[in-house]
Image (cartoon, rainbow, N blue to C red; front, side):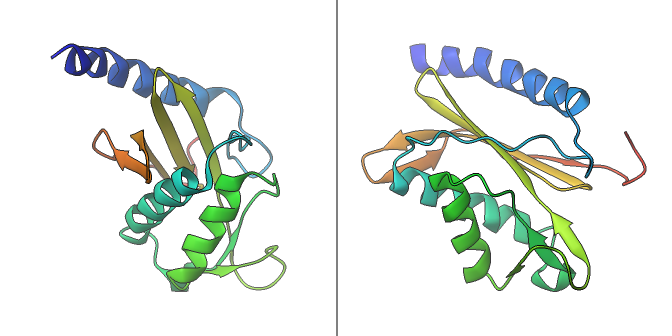
Length: 151
């Protein structure tokens, strides 16, 4: 019961933080700056990346264009690239064809991991609970679709 009460307070705060972050730091490609902890266990990164890519595939198919990921060297970025490739997405620098830049933010707080995957037209946000073998979703996925002309 205590854990449920914490989650009830955590979810609105995370949603507010995500909305606030979306409004404050947009780069030249209109996406937030990517960030993920470098000390994240590989199994956790892989589980979260696989889940987000599964959700991403429901809205953005592999034939959409070449996915462009930031080069941050984090375990999450590597896991995200591997998950995208496994689902048939082309990964590159955006030099050829239509580029689809993706940004991500992964943050830990109070035993939970909040992950956000963003494109110019879509944000996916979800919280996870770390387990001994990876991570499990601890909230529904939040999907925010927007017109590309919004700012």
